[in-house]
Image: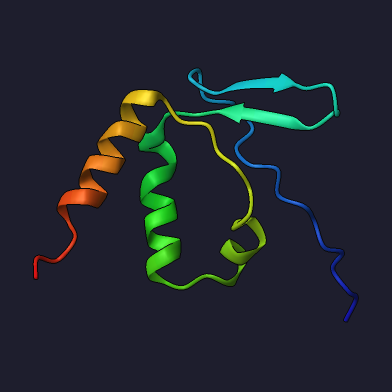
Length: 82
């Protein structure tokens, strides 16, 4: 039997209209996507305790100030009461 070479999956052939790719000075690629597109996948990965999440745990993400304020309020009100 011959060995099948591994192939790299680059995602769907056709890019979504609401995805924007931009280059930075450090030649790193940044992608802007709607939160609704990645949140369910990230939630599933956290729930499934996927190892690859650890590779990105120190990465920074940029979110809107509105979302940040809502997250802070949620964090404050979800604390268990004494």
